[in-house]
Length: 188
Image (cartoon, rainbow, N blue to C red; front, side, top):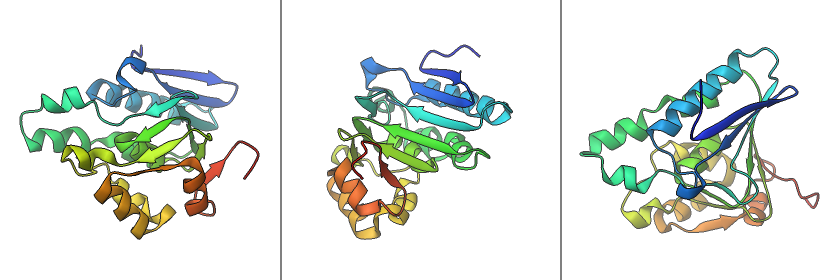
């Protein structure tokens, strides 16, 4: 498959998916989901790939769903079909190989939910995590509110989901260092 919104490459035995919509802050849309699904299935089937890494690069993991695309959906059922039933999360979470989200910069909304599907999340010092969609009148819907409490606790998840606040890499490390957030700067 030829990819437009992501780059899929193999580096030795590592499959690497790089989000490639910098002009849209790596926002998720249907095309991204289709290409992610193809890349994940490709990595799963490739016997040479031993681990899969997702990244947006050092300064931006991703800002979540493409707001422009969401505003063009005609009903809440369309939105549910776009996000709620999307199999990309399921494919990633159930991959038979280790998965790693290498996070730099903003990791918000649906992109945070993708990172939560990975086995490991490695955050750069500039990483920022959040579920700010509540500020747009939208509830988190990629099952992040079910996955995130296992890492940082229900109280903090409610704070993020109700207020739309962000936490930085240091706070994520403090909250979940024993539960799935790791610092790769060599300090933690």
